[in-house]
Image 1 (cartoon, rainbow, N blue to C red):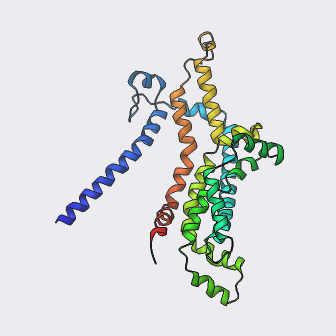
Image 2: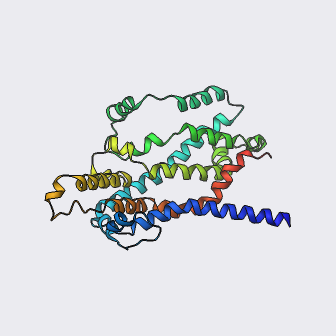
Image 3: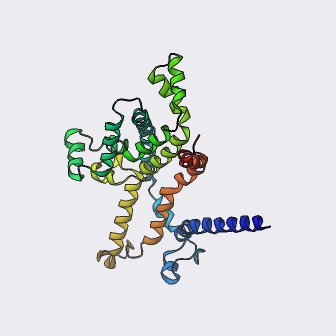
Length: 292
């Protein structure tokens, strides 16, 4: 009886936690489907007082830049995630091997870069003056390819792989590259899926590097495009010219609802993808703490 009461309490607790986590997202959807006037009169409501699709109409009024932004974001997310996972595993594998001569120096080098960096100005000069990556997709992919934090996480996972597996492969004549591609990578699927999710989120939400290095509209990712739209909308809504430009209706621009509609547009695909990686996500977070 006590066990059933405890299970009921635990289930109820997690139901409440899940509802609390979902409530902000539900509120964002509700605001995006409300009219601007109802928000000013009644404030934020979980159920719209006055329904309106005006915010989405404004966002999708000219779909070409939005579609192009989605294309750029999807491209850098897919290419960047695959490349980053490969480079991360390639770096983490040797420093996880206790028989590698330079394991400690390289591990310290990776860890050191977590604490110190060259700063924004040297980074900008390197990307533009030496690598000549301004206005290229590579400027959005390369800076995030190698993350020392991800390398250390991957190293911790690879440390748990039995050395006997590697030794037996060597006895059968397998070389290091074959061991890495046919044994290590398949065994690392949970860790790769977990890191891949983190990396994909990072690339999907990328806008700061685009702000620094992208001037050509052809390479503007989705997040930077939405930031620009929102900034221009707020400027026009608060501009003194809005008072005399009634025909343009800048003063009545639905800034609040457009902001939430853009948040839904930007985050929607990742919310759909996340459930498919959930089983790997949980296993990848817990497997490193288990013995055996």
